View 1 (cartoon, rainbow, N blue to C red):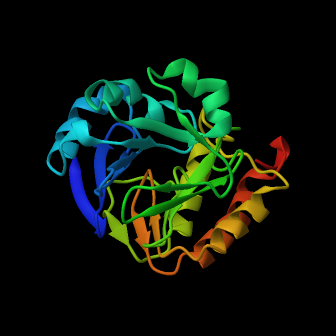
View 2: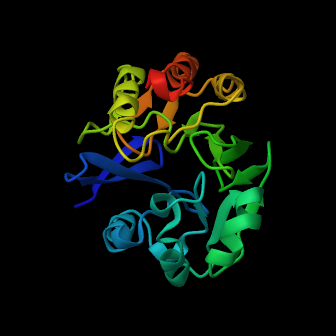
Length: 245
């Protein structure tokens, strides 16, 4: 069952919880003149997501399907969406378009570079390249300028079947999730580099007021301090050698 919550005007969080791994998979629909879906979702989740989108808009009217980086839970269902939405375009980084997406997708992608702008009608999405943040050479994030929403993909990932939105701190739950992941086969899932702190500080300078989080609660409130604090936690967790792990 897909939980549907409006977390900001015209912004809907479509969430599927997988109890076997205690994790939510969240997808975000922007209802506008040119509707946008952020995260195409896993291929196996497509029927449930299509039904949820259908409660808000006609899925055939989707115009933009966007994501951060090439990974199954962000892009797996893309071609299924493109089959039912004849005017939809995939939207990703220019690098992602070049190295992966145009070979994978049934329709060429719109590849974005730093400060490119995508307009859906009332809403404006500014793109920022964020290589390896949260992970993936091709990673990037989208910032909706009018509502000050940062679509931050796996940043602030945390476990549990949690509330759709919170105004409580996300850094603690995210740190706990990192430490848990470090104990299993997905250890090192967020690389820490010399660019990490600078990239997160640049996102903080956007002064987002909503964080649209892919795994876990989204956040409402002044978000810049969380992004700056996250940089320190990423360094603490991932900038250490095997003997320190």
